[in-house]
Length: 380
Image (tube, rainbow, N blue to C red; front, side, top):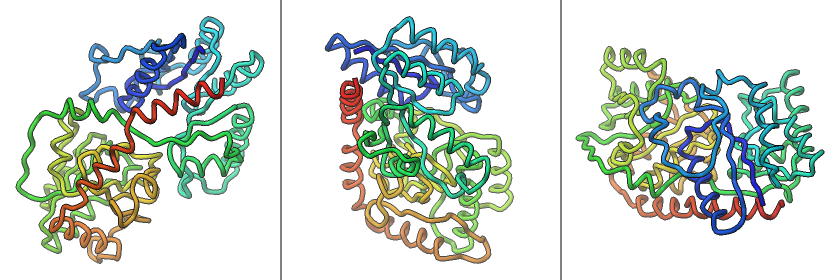
């Protein structure tokens, strides 16, 4: 079997370990793999401190089609290169890792004509915020229905990803359901620094962008201050609003610490020293940082808009699932007291640590790789 994977970004630690695992499995047989990377990474990530092509130590065969950011890549050029490599590599199976690129429909039609089997990876989940009724949404759904009709099978990340496909009319037999994972072994290998903190804290790791709902954490900090609650909120990440939030925290003397960006190999000790992890996103296809948090035994407080909610994170079992992160600084609500009481209970009892580490082991990258390889061979 010859497998061609069409992926949008080279610099993705979460996906690279999967591609590497597929390649190492294929090396044991006569199977071949080629990954076409459309760009280096998203524009917002070009300046992240982890980014360094010379540091890309994965050995799976890939071709970088555009040495630019995803947004600056020419979609027509990318499509033409996809077509070129389809004829040059002559794959038996094509895995499209999304459907946003305009060339997706071209590849699917060409694959049908050439008798090439196709699998599409879906990470989207339904969101009332993003999928409200509108003419544009109807047109977009009609387009996705065409793509689905041309696709032989789907790789789906979790229950909410499955639900999204069902809403679009995908049959259950077409869906290969998988866990979502990250490079657990490398995360531990790299996390060899130390980190100390005198005040208990809940942790957020991610970009400071609108959909991450950082403003809710600022308001949560205001409520902690008003209540004299002995717990900080530590925010690790970068974004255009970082300096703006720093000014608010400094001016109001809030119990928040904005650490800025950190290298991946510095995150382990920061996770390990935290009391809990918090992910208040307005829209999150999964939230791989929740996997990282569970790897260090942390309970996770996340919004129901996260793909990992009610899947990796079970409300009241190994974390809290919150319908909506909305806090009014001058008037605490039920959501605030749920979070505050939960954190207070964690400070008295850390019994969830071992449980969450066991759950994390279920989401091991080797299991996902094995199931991916099985799906590719099955559809072939």
